[in-house]
Length: 623
Image (cartoon, helix red, strand yellow):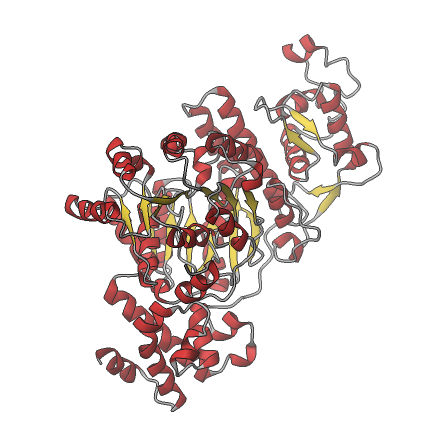
């Protein structure tokens, strides 16, 4: 039997595992269960794909989105891996063929939607198959406390109980402590099976600004910093996605809307164009994006506030999956908060979950208002520490105006303590501002020393102060779900006067103009070597991209499934003209060498003799 490393090199075209991948694969090969916490683009898929191929039987991958499973299967087939999917898009005859291959043991992996997996007919069919593992992608959907709970995921523990002899991998890029605990408890994963590779995405630059003229703000951001780049713009409402897509199109950009209210065939067509075309912008609600495997998304922009940090982090994580520089840009305003609070109040969830939604929204607002490194705040939310500021977010690159909030924070912290650390922000603010409403009088909190000591700030300003203190880790929300504010260990030095606290000023200033950044992918940008930024190198790079695009269109595939931009840049740098040289490139395995090697090497040989042109490339393709 081949080894995981040999399979990584010969099939996937990579010379070494990253992070904890090797350890996770060994754990799975030994037949043990795992929870994988990895950032988007961190390589989760390899952790179940390689064991599925190496272990006897077929690996079953539970995937919530049709587009995701189709994308993954297309990429695996390009590598020579026997993979298939079962979903509602398949005609009955196609589904029956795949089920027959499953029963005969001819597949390495099969991707199945959770709704189809839970059908008794599907489970009985799997009873007849030899299974190598069960992988649950987007596992945070299991948690009722998570930002993307899906009821059909709740039944997956019964599938686990039905096939106890095979290893299980639950995979997610976004899960706070409460969500992790629920996943582990629901699926019976032991503590030694939890693998966390860290949530940091250092290639993503984070930026948040107050809304002024958001359409013009967005257009300036795109024209000055991401002209010609592919990206996603998120909006809260369906109507707004269509309006913004029209606005960008009139401004000369290629933009398409995507939301659940569009006809299914329109959504599918727009998504396929986004995956297969360069430089296209999708303007979408949150209905778009989970599991999108496009590596060269250079920006994710939010024109409205996301409902939680988990949702924001997952959505921004769709940028820069190839590890190259990418932007997470957002504007927000008071109207966003009003709309999201109204949605929470009108939801059918119980009181505890509505309260949780409001807490998560407060944490999201706190992130917007912080004065320190945004990446540190994001990672802290997921209980991960970044020792030094990142130097790659707006608060690091252009520090904001602050005020000394030490005394205000001491008043707030003392009030939280004196009221028993069991009340939410609204109640604490009423006490600080000297309210004599019925609750405060009944609890006797109009008699405590901190009653009425906060009159220098209005309620809106106090709410911002408390949000920022929560985002900075001085306060946290009672994990029981009842919403009470609780002091953390970080609060003591501020409360005791041993440490100053500076928070963001509430006056909103006009955003400073930003310097222009790179326009689109170049060999220099992809390799971090400006000496490679020559006309000849760029001409070859564009010719290779054109060849890739044509090959992709012939097979109705996204271009990156054939080769990533990084691999094309490596072709320009190393100029491989033999099979051994081509196979040595990162991202090239035996199947891709056989399928595409000669076409790309012919173009490279032509470049070496100065013959690269549109005409020569067309002739090459015809041959």
